[in-house]
Structure formats: C-alpha cells, structure tokens
Length: 71
Image (cartoon, rainbow, N blue to C red):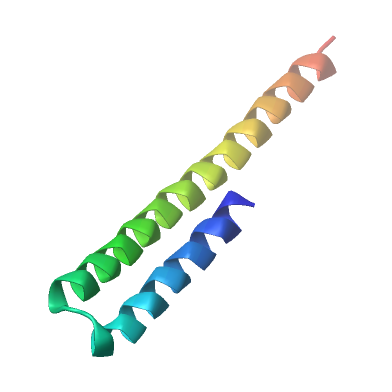
C-alpha cells in the first residue's frame, strides 16, 4: 500500500504544480515540482527495497528447506 500511496502523491504534486503554474509565482511552482521529484525518488527507493526483501526472504526459505532435506 505505501507504494500506491507514494505513486498517488507523486502524481498529485506534479498535477498541482502544473495547475499552479498559471496562477502562482514561479518559486511555488518549482517547489511543488521538486516535491514531486522527491516523492519519485522515494518511490524508486521503496520499490528497490521491496524487491530486495522478497529476494532475501526467498533465499532464506530456500536455504532452510535445503537444510531440512539433508536430515
């Protein structure tokens, strides 16, 4: 669920940045765009950690099952 939440927040900040470009100051628009970029980086980090956790769990399960096989 956190991956979906970060993806939605990234899209929201990018969309708000695009909408406020017409109305607000350039600094506010840049700030919102940079916040969207930070959420994009967080999304990449969270995705990579999730994949590493799944691979690590699979390796531990494989090692424990092969140890039980030699009994």
